[in-house]
Length: 141
Image (cartoon, rainbow, N blue to C red; front, side, top):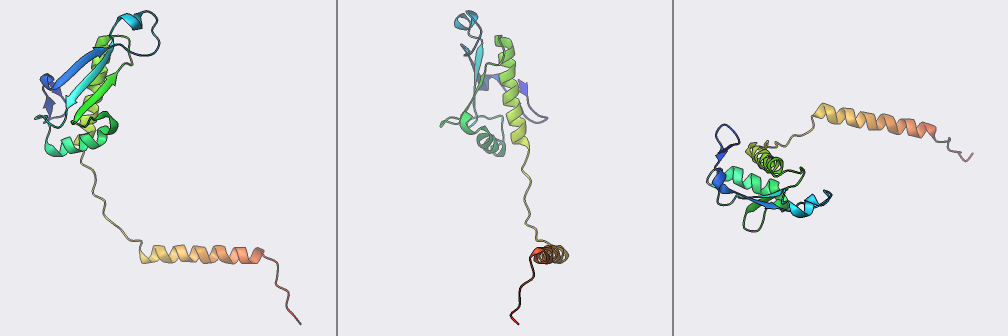
């Protein structure tokens, strides 16, 4: 079991880990050892997550989610399988923790009358200053 929060834990059977060859530098070792980890978690069919959390997780995941609703995380930061495996699981739990947070409801507000007055007074003041910088108009006498 992977514990995400106080009320949410994910069964390890719901997570599929594939070990693949990592890209990038590593010498001869990179061609022989499958040290990178590809974690797959079926968000759509997961019984561990409430509906709202699943919906937020799908939006948060973005491109990492497939058309079937499977979240794919590729971890190849480290040179060992165990560290990459732990990194992938940590990234998954981090995403789920982020999805657990309910977004704040935005309430529309209007500027107060006094703040509008202050803004307009400031504009008037700035306008007067700029007018004073201009040369005086010549009058026809």
